[in-house]
Image 1: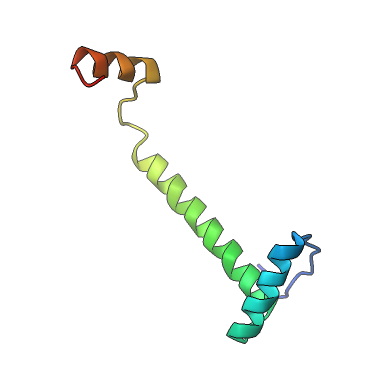
Image 2: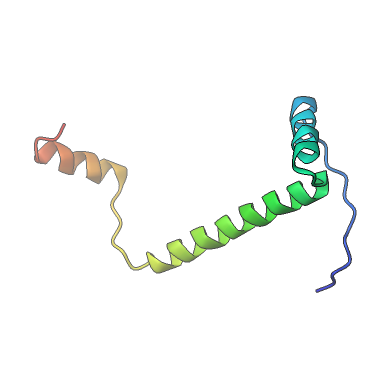
Length: 77
């Protein structure tokens, strides 16, 4: 993988862009750094979610209808 930064055009909602620019100015960081960190965080979160799904693949599942039937049978609803 190359360490050379790639340029991309991203269109932000005007108010979101203003907030992002203010955050960059207040934190002495570039908008690119903030966006890169946010994307890295989102991708890491996705990876964690996928790992959790993989860990739980063998768990039994129940349909929504079966859950409601079970709750009703046990006097919960």
